[in-house]
Length: 229
Image: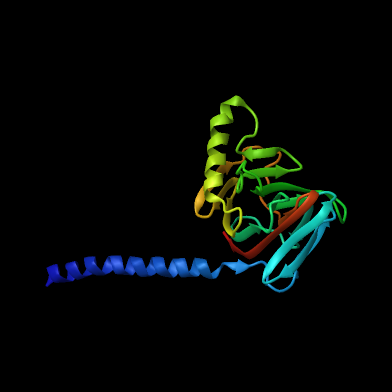
């Protein structure tokens, strides 16, 4: 009888653990919430240049001709540690874009936006989902300059061109925990970066959708969902 009881306990233990894991996963998934309602730009505001934003077919569309200055549609709310996913596409390849996170803004109603940006690259350089520091340090991952980083840049470009859909929707994921930043593009990890620069390491800020300054830009986002950690 003791043997039977022990055997039964051993059989049941994994089932209990699995049930607990499923409950934990369900609880985590229940924390994921959209930051765009699919219909309006409530909770967002435009700052920066002369680009424009509108809602169309459940998407936020960024557009403009002869855009003066980088333009951002930013969240009013700020976020710290999180996993954030969104879908992005170029309507055409005329203009560069990106998505700011943990971003900050200089003083004034229309102060310059700066901070971390997840790149949306419209060129065959292929650096989509790379990590750029807007109006501050420049490229963080990959490192733009230096012969010692040449191989990594070439690898990053080749992988980006393989994974990114220039004429379709792409799924991006950004994960921030403390000073550890990671990105994925269509399920492929692109960035794994620890920011050790104490002067510029930013732990909290807003999200911002970018219409890059230039002759033209036509981009869109949808399904912007965050799970705070």
